[in-house]
Length: 463
Ligand code: SF4
Ligand code: SF4
Image (cartoon, rainbow, N blue to C red; front, side):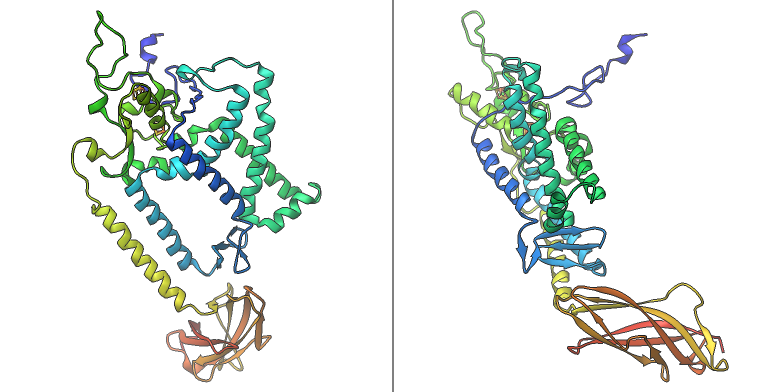
């Protein structure tokens, strides 16, 4: 076989060797101003991510995503299954906010706040460095540690993953349920126990095996960067005008060669958690973690050269052009956000304390009764009590004239935030039907006088 045929023409992924095997990364920690502030932010976020399910706002958890019941509580407000429009507007608002932040500040989320980066770099990586030792020049270990010592990191990984799995699950089941699960025997609750085990294993795979692959290959946000950024978005970039031509500080014939400021020490590469060389320009793999800035600033300080050979910048500035804050997307996104916020606000202000919807069940659309002169329709009404208190409802037919409604319980009661569906029987005179239908209007009214008119077509004979 011709080996040359198998050789890749270029490096496809920073973590892939020419022979297709994984290039495992052991990024060297670079201390500096950015690392200090990232640590402050990261530990605050770890605290916040852990505390959020415990924090109560107006008696409800700050965040609870109850998927089986399709109820999402976000900052004390519960989106019920009937709140599709509210939830859709909220989600569009979140997506637009992400677009705006990315257009302005690039991948600041990835480098500073994403749980993947926060836990990887500030929880798992420190455990790994403690047991495996820190990396030295070229990212190689300073001193190879015995395998038994390296293996000791795994129990700590498992503990960290177990804590993360519990934190993660608390967002979906609530802390009260989680406490019960934790305290009771796994045999009593095998399903929750299996879920917990599954999430713990998934976390182990993520932080122990996949690591930077999540950012480089799996995360859709990373993949969308090329369209979300523009030439004026904030990025971590290398000042090639100042740094090039790069070269080692070696005297040639007693003279130091005239070079740019980059001494090609490689520190910005060995510190990079995604294994790239920022000097090759903006790359999709760059998560904006600023480690290369700290690494290079330390080198520049040692050489008594000004800092910021690698710095926060943008592509326009790098090309010598001036940048403006008023770019099309930076204007458009806030306008759209304002529109969405206004719609959301309007709907919230005009929202009733209950929701009611008419549904037509499966089966015969109508039957004729009382010597074929009365048409009987069976329909359903879905009522949702949006308040924390018990609520009573009254239902009455407004249209068609002469129609009557029969419901098993004339006054329906729902407990706090309860949702229930009731069967209704509508009896309408045959004479009101035209072309097989007759408009139906039902009034649903609660005890405080709030009312909704529900509309549907009754099915009937063509007369
Ligand atoms: S750390 Fe700075 S000086 Fe060293 S190779 Fe990177 S850019 Fe050049
Ligand atoms: S290039 Fe720099 S900012 Fe980007 S991921 Fe690597 S170290 Fe972080």
